[in-house]
Image (cartoon, rainbow, N blue to C red; front, side, top):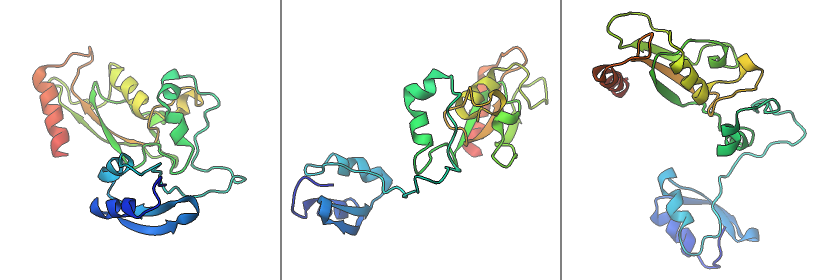
Length: 196
């Protein structure tokens, strides 16, 4: 939406590598396609009132099949960072399509890391602890961190849900059963992520 009445903002969109897709003159605005990295530059341009995502419109009377029930939610950080506000409005940002590497004591696969169809969201597990071949978390810290990132709340009836409850996980075990790691373990794990 524009403050100005001329075509200077449309020209700015073209300059930023975008193109106008609809004229919305009734609200002194237009729709456009623009590279994501250039949106903030457009938003800061003189003459721009507001830039918003052209979100899909959904029926208000239809139950939301993609929404997350937050009625039992107890972890305060989710509300503090506003994650619950983006989960349940289009485009339902819940971490889908994102993979997060957890470089820690490993991840113990449980129901909190399953998809809506029951498959695990832990895409891969690797181990850099020199004295074991065990891939799973035997200390607990890595699973705890993975839950903060991507737990879906299934084990707690929605009481504790991670920030991105549909994100996939890559378990990179660099710490042993006592939570101890060496510098080379950490670097090897980070190096593996870079190649993966």
